[in-house]
Image (cartoon, rainbow, N blue to C red; front, side, top):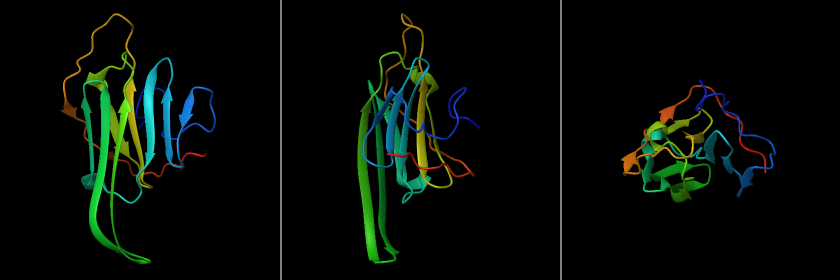
Length: 136
């Protein structure tokens, strides 16, 4: 099931309107939608909080100490992204694929229409199929 209309779960390979950060993170803003792809493979949906406040989306992940191949580790991250002014904040969605790719998506509205900018939490749904990680 696509996150936004006409969107697949796979991040684009290389597009001119793509803003790439470090490996595993992509932000795409085109005419119809705003999308964030974030590799959070070390976190479960219960470890993640996604909320929108004013013109920003805040993504926070934290898990307590766990054992891994090298010993014990705890992880935490915070990401904050400015939403374009024409994103329909009432229609935001967020999903987590089976392989740990978080996809946050908001369709854009026609200019001149007002969108609600109050703080609200965005639930993270779990997808059963894996999403390939974005290429850098």
